[in-house]
Image (spheres, rainbow, N blue to C red):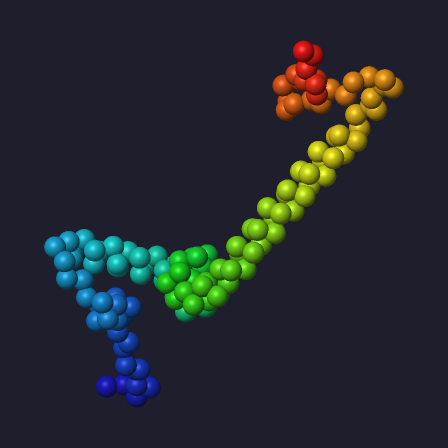
Length: 134
């Protein structure tokens, strides 16, 4: 035995942790275990293990599902705000539409003196007299 420092105890691999926590016990266990090993090796090689910035980014990226699964109370609390915003937007759209129609009506030339008013119906361009001759 050499006089060097003692070696620290070897830590179990990531696969040992994942296998202990969530063992693969299905008909395709061998294939799934191989996929798990491949995923772990890719995570280690790309520097995702222990990278909290990456995990926060993934949390934001999957935000909709995360909120649906874990933040249901929050989503239920803010749901009325969305419907109120949609109603306000619809109302604003109606006001703009009405304003545009009034402006278009105001741009029409005034009727000539002594002429009978012929109201226009719809977008067909058909004019109807107010009183029909008998």
